Amino acid sequence: GWGQRELIIWGRGHNELQWKAPFYFIQGADPQFGLMKAWSIGNCDHGGDDWKPEIKLTEQAVEAINQLNPKPKFFVLCGDLIHGMPGTQWREAQERDLKNTLKNVDPDIPLVFVSGNHDLGNTPTPETIDDYCKHWGDDYFSFWVGGVFFLVLNSQLYFDSTKCPELKQTQDEWLNGQLAVAEQRNCKHAIVFQHIPLFLQNPDEDHDYFNFEKSVRYEVMEMFCKAGIKAVFSGHYHRNARGFYKGLEMVVSSAIGCQLGEDTHGLRVVVVTAEKIVHKYLSLNELSSHGIGKELMDLIKQN
Image (tube, one colour):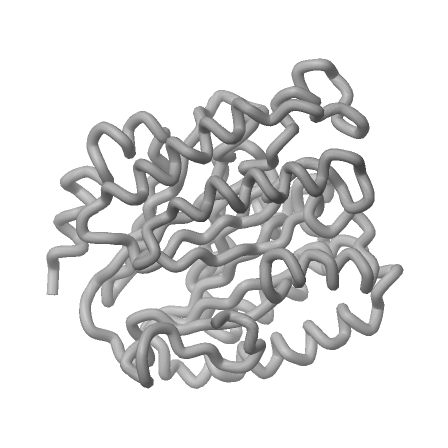
């Protein structure tokens, strides 16, 4: 399973440490059961007593992913799985309904969960993190797929760790060890998943709710660049955005659930080739009707 924070070998044996051929995975973000209702009534703190639209959208996402051929190597959900914050009244029912919807993902397509601020609380505590881990698995871990090294981080610890400083320190120490592995360049690429983006478009942009505080941002970006991380994939913004810092690409994907901009409910298809990481955000309707498209499929077929 994914419960070991140490190096995780995906699949059987050590085969996944070796590069074989191009592959792809699906990234989704922010199904956030309950936000569409809360947003529509202008009460994001206390609204969200209905999440039927999000169930329907997530069902559509699952159906679209299940019919893809070849199958994606995995499906990663980059946080804000549900809208109800820890301790709020609809949280348990939202978690139950999301799990029931995701049970229908093809068993040959592993699910990877990333923790978001609504999953842990804006100021997480040891208790809220423990509760998340009991429901969804570890809040940070690593795994290998096809010679590519993947890191999943708890970005809330960078946002506000005042109530759990020891847990922040523990993740930092673990991350330093994992980045040392990446820096040894035994992997074809190294990729990070986290809920909150480092930045949205410009690495020097001002800090706000949707990105990292600037001094923390630069520290993390420098660490990632030194280790050779190629890309960071996030959600949280409920819109698509991207930017670059040196050789690092920051990719922000819009939501399966509530949209806060001009994008539509969708998923990101990410193709990993020997040379590069290519990605495209597709609406759920597009992915359902046309799959990942010829251009990305041609990249996967290259050897």
